[in-house]
Amino acid sequence: MSDKGKSEDSSHTSLNFIEEIIESDISNNKNDGRIHTRFPPEPNGYLHIGHAKSICLNFGIAERYNGKCNLRFDDTNPTTESTEYVDSIKEDVGWLGFDWEGREYYASDYFDKLYDYAVYLIKKGKAYVCEMSMEDIANNRGTPTRPGKESPWRNSSVEENLELFTKMREGEFPNGSKVLRAKIDMASPNMHLRDPVLYRIMHTSHHRTAGKWCIYPMYDWAHGQSDYIERITHSVCTLEFEVHRPLYDWFLDALDIFENRPRQIEFARLNLTYTVMSKRKLLELVSSKIVSGWDDPRMPTISGLRRRGYTPASIRMFSEKVGVAKRENIIDMALLEHCCREDLNKIASRAMVVMNPVKLIINNYPDDTTEEVAGKVNPEDPETMMRIIPFTKTLYIERDDFMEDPPKKFFRLSPGKEVRLKYAYIIKCESVVKDPETGEITEIHCTYDPDSRSGQDRSNKKVKGTIQWVSIEHAVKAEARLYDRLFLKENPSDVEEGKDFKDNINPESLKIVECYGEPSINDFKTGSKVQFERNGYYVVDKDSTEERLVFNRTVTLRDSWAKVLKNMEKKA
Image (cartoon, rainbow, N blue to C red; front, side, top):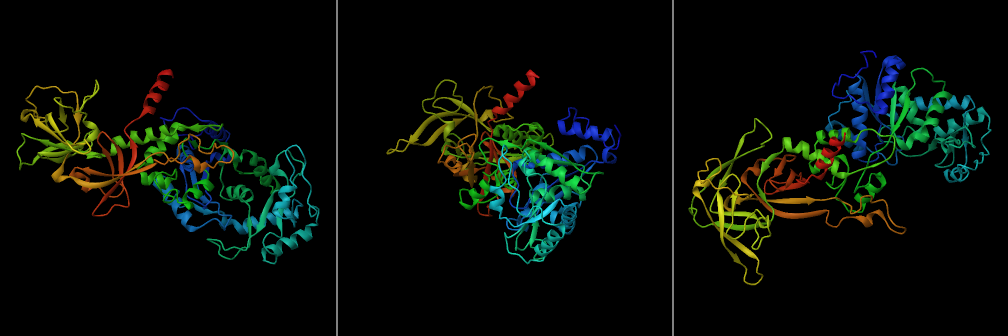
């Protein structure tokens, strides 16, 4: 293999089937050993986690083989596209950590060239103007076992087709009155080869070309030719384009493009449990206001994952673990959550935050004393700083950390039992106060051992339980948005007849609670990642104000997937 294209990533040892193809092409000096990929989104919606996998794959291949990767917007349908989507896509790709190094292109950049290519096909007798409606074209296409019917205009002369196509471009015909079709084979077992439409009339302004054009190329026509124009070597697509590949190659052949031509390769798209990936369905969730927008933290969009607190590193890790497959499969959401925990554990600051508070009073602690205890900002960071936490007589603890009549192996607080207040002292529960009407515990009264301060413990006591707390006097009130999976079923699209995928919406996918945190949470800014100790990972939301912090729960601390991965490694 030439050094020009060989991977420099020594940690990446096993090759997936796409890399095997690429390494073979490099060995054979195909395309002069160049590797040039592209990520080609349509700017008609926000990118989701499936697109993130494709981004990581295409840019990752370019990085691994010292090649290039373009960012190209396949903007061939002006009725659904906008600069809003273009801007969001650029933000998402950049946020994931990839740089297209100025190679930002648009299919609309090539409209003139694509038109010339179409004229070339007409002159070769391989394309014709058809006056059938799109509905009639579909009805006459036949079935995989029954040939389609040829268009009455299929055998029009080259001169007549050139004249009509010119008039189509000049805007002389109304929408839907004519199309340009490729002349291939109406009896082909591949339905995509049955005289596909290349151009349709659309008197619609384009987000980049404005009113210059009133005919627009179909995606299949623009795709391969745009790849060729950009000198793409490997056109990596998702599996649904496998049946389109013969058409991709037919166009290149018909245009007499045989040197330095791109090769289309398909891989299985990403399907994730408890979510949907269809742009149509995601748009439906937004338009029906089931979610607050494209960046709602319950959405699988990259902007939604970013707002929820997922990190670029965690998504890249997830894409690497998922790998590249040839067959469709569904990936467990738990794997994505595991990757997020792995990264957040290394980078997130820590803080004690009480979500469901009950008042705790230390009877023998001085009334007007505020003591400072210290905790590490991040114990996973060897260079971490310490944070100062005020400790007083009256605290909040989690209501779940106390039980009046506990079962065996309950190692938290209960009457007559001792626990450690994290970073502080060992306390013992002496009594409780209850609401006379409801019977709910309103106060827990304890005593503390002055010799048991954490880090200076002279008590020689050993306790099994440690609980978190917040000084009531210094507590910072905040809002916590507890996000969960948006759907109840693993495959929300698998619905009974007469049902809709939205019938599987989880009514508990968002709970909003008031919580109380230690003073250090006031230092967090929008986007800051934090672990609420013994609770989960959170991020400061953009809805936060100077008066009130808002935290989105990213993931809980539970991680069943870690055990699964460990078992997989043992078997391997």
